[in-house]
Image (tube, rainbow, N blue to C red; front, side, top):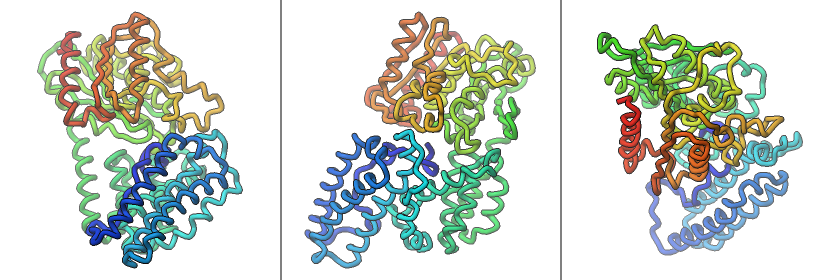
Length: 500
């Protein structure tokens, strides 16, 4: 899930370290000894928490709070041991950091409890009341420089957003998470400096990771109300950059679902390049089906258009904008491929050379264009095939039944429905040739799930190239150690099949 919406426990577990003011450097052996001992306690805490986070978050509320308070007490025992020998200001910093470090876990409990226990949080929950003591700090400008506090605040706001989104007024809202936080912030943050910071923080993240489509009202509100010129310039520059990036290509609505119009960003080669039918590459962005934007592939699309291809970046429904799950995204992906085949003459497309590609969740969607034949939009013309002719997948998602994707199944009556869009459950004979690239140290999508998919594809008689990148993590297309290798493998694959 996205950073500012909901975070499963395993996504935020980082070793506890002191986050004193950036310019603070321990000046004596007592502080150094304290920090060293605190680090040991922090490692012990996480050593017990990491392998048990599902069990811990599945506990009843009082049991969970006892677990957190016991761990918090262990941290304070270290601080109290050195309290009479440490500077008063440093002690206050440590108290604040420890408390907000654990309050963050508590703020994330309600959502994680529902995900991992499979039960609704009881109406008698006291979590919000427990955290009321922290509300005053939301209006302290100096706290904005404290990372433990701002990390906690984002988790607390995520808790409020999840509750706010149950209001029916968001049912057909686009950019629903941004709208919800925009409505909530003034209720909890009244200090002008603090409010400007949080509005900037959320809006910048949204534009950077979700885009500018249909946020004109919030963007205008920010410009009218922001008194911090640095924030204002950063937002307007980012917005302008995204706006400019949408000017040099065609934008076509390939489907409307309710109030949501979904776009294909189409990059065409120069007119007169050749009269032959053109190969097509279709990109699906990643982002855990919760965030992401087609803009991330505009540069790649431009490069393919220069080679004489038609290149497309697909907008599809995501959780943080439309409140949808991957099932809807799968239908969108299949609709997009069908739309291209349906409009092939208009753009001189070679419908026998359509390549689908994607990173992470985008890789999953590209795969499901070929695999998930039970998921079709009611308005689709089923005479046109959604199956690409070739697939290239980077760090794709193959199993939506594991704990990494538990949030998808949280509200499903039939938990097995996830299998109908899980590639590892959909392998059959007769699938198009595929290129699969996956890092052996991928912490987001287990390497073994990709390996199983490749083996099942081979056993079913399909054509597949599986490339393991030793020691590579999830974002192989961005990692300087692997990005060139990824590019070379993809180019070689296209050449092998006569596309280059």
